Amino acid sequence: MLQYENYLQTHQSRFLSELLDFLRIPSVSALSEHAADVQQTADWVAERMKAAGIPDVCCLPTGGAPVVYGEWLQAPGKPTILIYGHYDVQPVDPVELWTDPPFEPVVRHDKVYARGASDDKGNMLIPIITVEAMLATEGTLPVNLKFFFEGEEEIGSPHLMEFMQKYSQKFVCDLVVSADGVQWGEDQPRLLIGFKGLCALQIDVFGPETDLHSGIYGGTIQNPIHALVHILNSMHNPSGRIEVEGFYGGVVSLTETERNQMAAIPYDGSDYKAKLGVTELFGEPGYTTWERAWVRPTLEVNGIWGGFQEEGVKTVIPKEAHAKITCRLVPDQDPCDIIKRIINHVEAHTPIGVKAVVHSEPSTASAYFIPQDHPGNQIAYDTLEALYGKPPYYTRLGGTLPMCNLFLDILGVYTVTFAFGLEDEKPHAPDEFFRLRSFRRGQLAYCKLLERLSQQDNSYDE
Image (cartoon, rainbow, N blue to C red; front, side, top):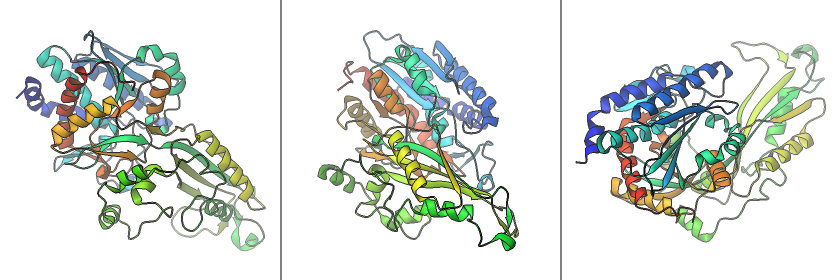
């Protein structure tokens, strides 16, 4: 057994205790009332990095949540790897559906339950632990390392474009490795080669100056909720295809090779439905489930509200109604163009008697793709194959990782995803959890990855 492997095994109890402390801080970036908690989390991460032996650590201001940056640059002639992760988490609503309070972590059956356990606190703590283990046992690291841990990923990283442009020289590296991502299964690895882009909007529909008595005024004016439902319904046809004019204009058709690769990924429709708790699947005609999820754009209503929401009956025509929507985009779709097209669509489909206002949220990102044969992918592939005893699947993901394109556009380097969460761990949902087996396995995997990366020359820009 290697020295660092023995070190990892010996200190697992402490590592788990630290993870629980990390999870107790409610670093919800989407809610302003948690701004102090987000800052506290950044400070916690910085202190944990220093304790691991990383000599130069600081919290860099962004105009929003700070980026926790650290570097260990004592391997001359070796590649410089930047490790990315995020310490912010999603809101916990609906809190009543949690089995335990979301920021009071609980361990059951070798799983830790808490908001952020899988996305991304459990995963981003792994490379910090890896550095500690290697420095404690070897006294050195096989490559140069930089760390970039942000606190706004869950809201689309709105401040990081300007931040990256300002500090671009600080983050120069040969390759980015993301500790944010998912594996295919407990015993089946995968490498992610693409993420969808994102744009987000809110639609507000306004009617009368105040809520009105539905008996006195019903049938004489437009109901804002009815109008909003009409607008939302106009965005898809009955089969699920998006009806916003020009929405698919920049979408590149899949090649036969790409479709064959996706078709080769195991798929059980009955099992897929059972895991989601649905009886039927639904989506754009002419595409498989994997194609819809990974490489076709979507427009989803994320929330809708208006009028009376409490128990019982209140007979009113509400004065306003609201909806939040997001679009997951694919390569060659421009988020700003899609936003303009949706605004035009809403204007064209707003019924008489109400006013509709659309504003975009700062959460925008373009889709990301890394060539399957990129040298960094090949090294990660070999590492995972040796660890799991079987070759990884190459897949894409319907989620968004905004920083991947920023790193590519500003630093000129690709990002390889190397993380150990699983999709069934309920990220963004009540009762989120992280398998502690994955927590332990990921620590060893990062040690092996860094060793393999040290054997590659600095030509990761292919």
